[in-house]
Length: 307
Image (cartoon, helix red, strand yellow):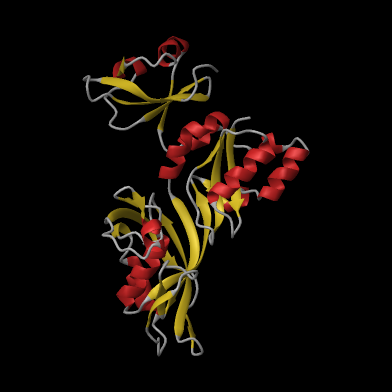
């Protein structure tokens, strides 16, 4: 069995939990996921099965879309609703939608983020959440993130009972973006402690909510021998690369991992980025410029050596 499975991860489970359960359901050990989701977050989790595990890194690098909620009035240790409150500030009145939109728009583009203490980022060989659990503080590295779109999707709701203000949002972002931190930083620009009070991932690596299956649905399809019809081909995992179809003569060289001049591929100039090589309509290898040899390309990953 091989292919990509858009899984709908339910809340209360880790991404690793999903992989563990799928290994039993699908009766195969070679399974991985392309992008961790926190236990409190539900949504699309790309799953790679069999040879498709070779494209995990490309899925992880791809863009993601989330829908969630930001709440002003207090911040937490985890930057979401599961943490302990660390700072409070009463929201005494409603904030205009125009101001909120203006602040959110200021985050579109390349931004700098300091990852949350409760995250898997490593510092000096230890993950930040390990420091946090031991009540230790450590200097966190500044990371660059890409925000393609960040928009409010509901009217702000002011609660007199809780002295908070909340609104829904949708964000499209690149690899390594902490949406929790985006919520906190948005609140800071508006002058309030804040946290991410809800989050769902509706798209990841080109896989959408409408395609995603729950673990229960996967188990049912396996039982009825219908799961193959719902697996996406490995080719979906390399969609971000420029495609280049090769002939039988080139295939004999490519499947053996040979370094080749770019002209041999019929290219008019040396490519600056990785390219996906296809033979008989199947992706067989990813080639990249070889920095040690002028005008030559080398394989960065061989995906198939037989078709």
